[in-house]
Length: 235
Image (cartoon, rainbow, N blue to C red; front, side, top):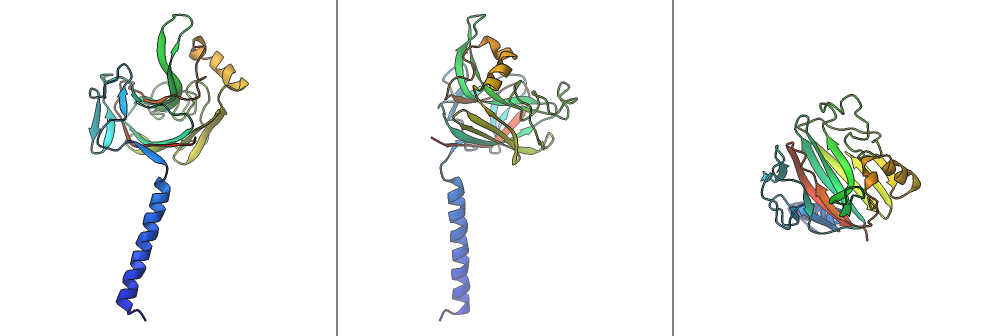
């Protein structure tokens, strides 16, 4: 028979083991894109160099500073089917975005190329002048930028952390915010293509056509924080 102290120790050990197993299962399959220490998995959008200007690591968070000093940053690797999770915190009236399936494509009118992808909009709905009157428009937080507005949104104000989840599985895509599904659509469906044709993306014939691409964090000239950036491949 176990004496009481030994029994309690073993019980505590079992609980710890169960907690560790649960934590391991929750993290299984996830790849950390930003670990709070370096940007080795990212590069400048205009070169192969690791971002060092305009993007700062502060207390384990990634911050893009004001003034458009650093420009956008992109992952070094491309992703096809995935779940992307991250937290963001806005400063007052800040604007940014997360783009996915990012590739360099050509503008049919100008014959120039740009890095383009579908955007999960991030913006201060409560204070940004163009968004404040319509906080659930196609330019508000969580929107498929210029294409689909968010629904059932519960955005926390500037200074507080919000949690993003983006699911890309074949042509099916979902935008989530703080545990709520905001938008669900089929890429390249007739409805999607019609919305693209009515937007500023109409001059890019290959917009959103690629099945894989990079992840981009946008420098829109405002101070914004990111943390806990991770991705799970669904291939």
